[in-house]
Length: 597
Image (cartoon, rainbow, N blue to C red; front, side):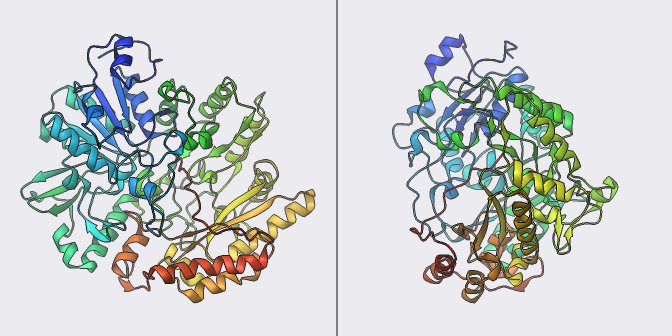
């Protein structure tokens, strides 16, 4: 191992390797994104973490898979293994709109140029590397691999697909947030652990030939082939997978597939504050790799002055993949770690004192946990908020308000905006504010931490649809709007309110969208944010879309699959919007919003 100073930028070419004087590399990453050395990008997080522990890491960003494969050959074979991911997003979500039209830009590529990664990038990259270097282990990870670790519905081919391990031929899959697992796996490979020893590592998955040996406490799912034959079997599988994904101590999961089986080992316990701080206490340059020579990377522009406060989300929205990848339990950084990063922004040349986002997947979950941890340890609920907030959940925003105060007190910070989503059911119910910290939090959010418009996500107005989304009643949004308008009136401000909605979600009919478009609570609100539902792997909503069953109850659910009628649902939104707003510009697919790490 190389224990030299951890300040170099990761090499991406032979010339850069030679400049470092390296005659070998321990781990070579292949990724579908341009390489940005920022903690919002997973490749940078894992690369810096391995580097901290003495490993030499190189990165091949967006390799050309169409030519003679020189990008896959140029650095040769690593000493330990190849690491493969599609980038910060599933490559199919990155490439296609909900109507399956090819997107014309890619926020994770220099100058937004499209076409720089293949469809199903993890599988394509892995197969090429297996062909060129059959004896070198391959570890896959990131969102695409994580959410395709078991049988899943693929919207773009409109069929069930087996685990990405069976499709790609990868040796190991690290799912979820991978710092601790990847370090343990790297050390195991370096130390020559046997296959059986490596199979004991938590938070990995693998494919093995043969029949699994029954072990007490193991959850054995219906096979891939049974799921192909029975939509009910697939829905039953998912219900079990989702339940275990939201447990502190889940079982080993085994899913037979073809002439073998996929095994998914349990997750690691949530990282504590000290561990979370260590993931950020790394020498990130917070810049794109010098190879891009100043070319603009749109996703980087959106997050370069952002600060991530925590990981995880316990909201449990049925259409969302965040909990499936990051986990339900909140893992927060300490205030001191966050403040250190805030002060570090001041040294970035074009930083003007404005933090674009002080948040996370759900910004106002920072520091929130169960009042009695022993109850959380036994809990099997997917959501701490739906169908009603858990009585064991501490919803106080006091610690978050203190964090905002300390960040804003840093000399040189002009504004700290909250660009991430919030859950307003954490501080409101239909009667009003839920505790003494709720009104001060919302007032401060509106008046001090919102840049022009506060974005919230009621997702629909009709309670029957919201039940299928696992979202709170729209009556809560009505309460939010009353309080929002009151705060603006008292302060003499004109902050805007922008609600996000989804059309064609399972359970949603044309009549439901018509009622949404005519809802009186939306009068006078700027309305241009509606997203046609896109089924993505490993969500309850995608299972509903494919099976026509609600996996929570196994009861039938209406699903609109006809493209024209799906378009009509979305058009209702804009038809109603044109009567409510002066704005009536062209309808278009909303841009992709990069998600936080």
